[in-house]
Image 1 (cartoon, chains in turn red, orange):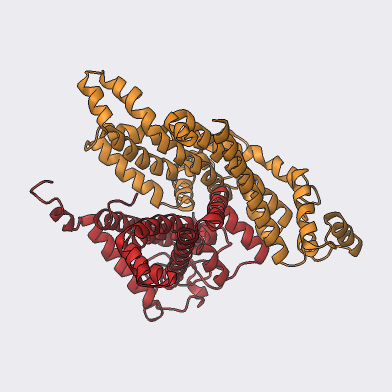
Image 2 (cartoon, rainbow over the protein chains, first blue to last red):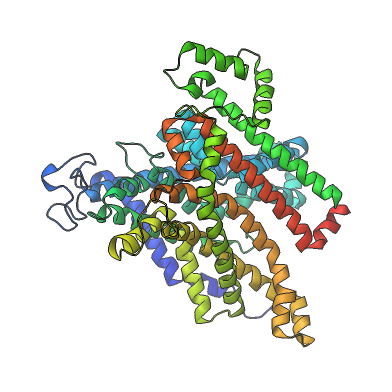
Length: 279
Length: 308
């Protein structure tokens, strides 16, 4: 035990994390108010000014091959991509945590089944599995969100199971059981709040992965479908105009990079401050 | 040791079975397999022959065993696009994928691990900071953006390398770099923290206190212990390598398995999709098995623990 508490220094926000949080706040703001902020509808074509470079009159970020405003499409894409990533992260956390708690509660064959499911997930790269499912069922926005919602569930399951087992070994869970609480009450009202911070930290760690996964699928033309747009989608379609109109690709690419970077930095910082035990 | 290998082997087989079951269930859920696999404008006789061959008139559990039997005997169905066996089609594309993924794997492991270990041993130096920044950049830039940036710089602006296609070794350079970059970053970051953790252990301090030469401390005491977590990550990497190849081959029009997968998904050529999925899973399971066996060799304590 040292006399000078090392805990004090942790409260100082590093500049990189501060900038990341500002960037994320900006992205959330743009996503929420995309409808009000975008100067044009995303499908409005201005055929007279096709492939206009950035800063041309009326189009701050230029236009694409059909004369559609890149800024408007970008704002809508931020909204769609963040919506998918957010929905998917929530599904994945909810599913993984439930499965982890079930494994901890019942053990035995339930636990074996969860292990087998985790092995299955480890044996099949997520992109390959998603492509296969999309090939069989066709693409739709809801299928995409649900599919992305399976990304990284095994991480939550592992964490939730481990934490639940150690919580059961502690006094408070045993005490509530002794008081006659049902298992679901013990898990949801007593154990969950105690393990929530660790789960939230791992949500911030898997969020950038989901953003990248969705944009990758959309880039390949198998994620978000026309006429809707997403960040990966814009890069995918803009690819054909890389030499003549690189701005179509660059603006969504920069947004993807800065956003994943910002969440990674903020997530790492959150992990280090809130939960030094989490690997 | 034999028990350890046997349980690992049994678990791998279970996993393979789980993946095959997944493929079976997804195929049955998506509608009539005969129509889905053969396409809409197939003559009635061909559909009936397919039903007969795959035993589609039988109860579902019989269909399941029929399906497993067919897969194990190498019958993955026919590609509906060019009416040749799916397996053959996929195997034809395999060498092209290996040409870009194997060098990428070698680059990732050599550069990633050595940069990470070097940074850990020179903690706080300029090189260390550089490695941290570059590795963070490496895994936040999506591979499709990386590929397009490389094309923009080396093909469009500098005209040094072709922007896509195949034929000469020059065509393979940009794809290999695109596949490597992200994982070099992750591997460097991971090796760095694994090495730092090992260097903080008491046995390293003991070795240094005994006067063991610095290079011996690193090579004989630290690295073998840091190797276990790094090997785990390399095992994971092999799977992502295939996923990386899918995106990269599409960007560079590289005629490998990944591009075949994308075009098959787009055309709903399900026999090919299923064949690639099962092959990738089999490859991943083998890799994980090898990694598990390597553990026992790298860290004999694990075997001892298992035997007790």
